[in-house]
Amino acid sequence: MKVLLLGSGGREHAIARALLADPQVSELFVAPGNPGTAAIATNVSLDPLDGSAVAEWALAHGIDLAVIGPETPLVVGVADVLVAAGIPTFGPSAAAAHLEGSKAFAKEIMAAAGIPTAAAHVCRDLASVRAAMTEFGSPYVIKYDGLAAGKGVVVTADPEAALAHAESCLSLPGSQIVVEDYLDGPEVSLFCISDGETVVPLQPAQDFKRALDGDAGPNTGGMGAYSPLPWAPAGLVDEVVLQVAIPVIREMERRGIPFVGVLYCGLALTSRGTRVIEFNARFGDPETQVVLPRLATPLGSLLLAAAEGRLAEFGELEWRDRAAVTVVVAAEGYPGVSTLGGPVEGIEEAEAREGVHVIHAGTQMTPQGLVASGGRVLSVVGEGADLESARMRVYSGVDLISLHGSHHRRDIAQRAAEGH
Ligand code: AMP
Ligand code: GLY
Image (cartoon, rainbow, N blue to C red; front, side, top):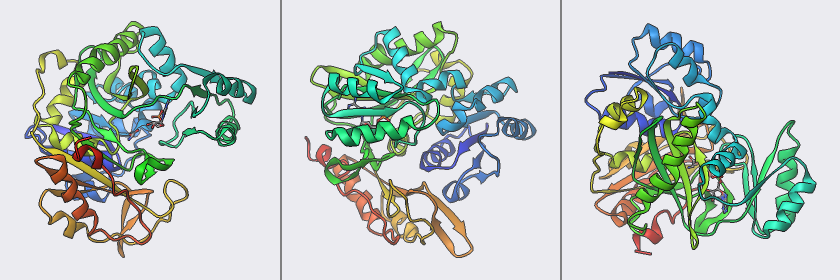
């Protein structure tokens, strides 16, 4: 099987690695890819947002499966163009990706399907934001409706900061924001693969969204993750599939917009039960870096079955009995204005450690060597028999990476490894 993967981040490097472990995958192209994917697959210089160019290239190269990594090409309809060209495609249509592209739409689907989530109001002016804040109380949760690369949400006890975020979001033409009730409790990310009808869950992971240790600092795209979750209730995956994923897939089907791809369920396990925080229409970054190395089932065959509507025949997934932890090495200033261009060193040394591999997220190869080109630069992954061993391994790798001014969290998976 010849596969074309769209995207250039850490998630795509991790997907590429997993696809190549599938003996059915004979050739892998990544557009545009990054220096990490260049080392294991063939990077192609194509704009992932240009659906017609991607389709033309895929047809000319006999691609059997296209996999769309990031949300932006999904939301602009690249899957629609590929499917219309007859290319089996893993990733939802623009209409289905609206589940991620608009938080107000996601709330509407959840209401229609009876899915437990935070109470919310969609607001288009500051007066209604103020009213919603008074209704829900502190901490305030203010969300930009559209895509914002993990930076559109502010959760704060400070009403001025909440209003300032609302104001900056509303200053964009035609924008709306969602103000919602605060959900307390640990967060879980669960990826559900769907062909539009059948739902196959992967194993859950936990992401660390805040920039600093102890969950302090601003929200980011994700600073680290681990899987499995030894503390999670035994029936969690079944519960989320039955109460959340299947109802969403059915509601989308009923509206004539079947969802083919990854339904990423971002959940809060509150004292009043499991609640949906958000949906994404793609694999999470950096959770993918810890979920896919644990999946023993060949990924290319699974994604092709989803793209071709054959998931019902696919059977149970198989998992490796091991734990994985990833730690993101971020550039100075991230998630604010990041200092880019600094040399990145120590990857080979880190990868020489047992159970450690390094995923490229925001790097670029220059004549002077590898440099940082994005806020999240690397995602170092450690694998081991349990979380404690995976954690020791990942940090032994992180400590060998050098990038001037970079920062990372030291507490990824710590509480889970300590058994609480
Ligand atoms: P989102 O982009 O909707 O996933 O939000 C990003 C992060 O903001 C989430 O992972 C949570 O940590 C936090 N967050 C979002 N909504 C809520 C909520 N209703 N209550 C508490 N925290 C939230
Ligand atoms: N790690 C969160 C996300 O991918 O949206």
